[in-house]
Image (tube, rainbow, N blue to C red; front, side):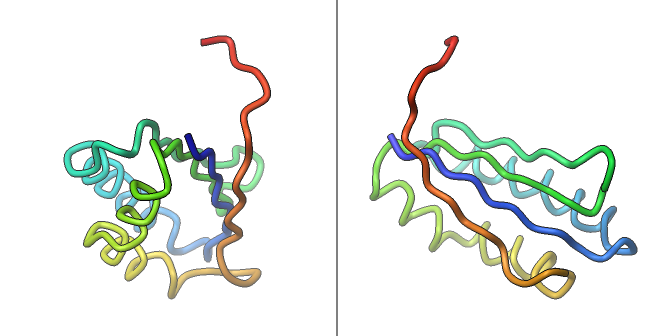
Length: 100
């Protein structure tokens, strides 16, 4: 399994557009990416312009397929022009422990 997070911040006037695009994107992932075992998006409460996405990919092939998907391209077309503080920060983790 591959555990990944993405962190980014968008312009305040783009928050609603980005949230709508996130909902569409997560539905796309659910319906088209069997190798993406988990995908969630969180919005920071104290600063609603900040988002983090959590992924669990089955393997490197699933991660690569996700990155090349039509859904990613569509989602990027919405949020990338609205980014503040530089590009998205992608981080890969290894799991140490879980309660599930």
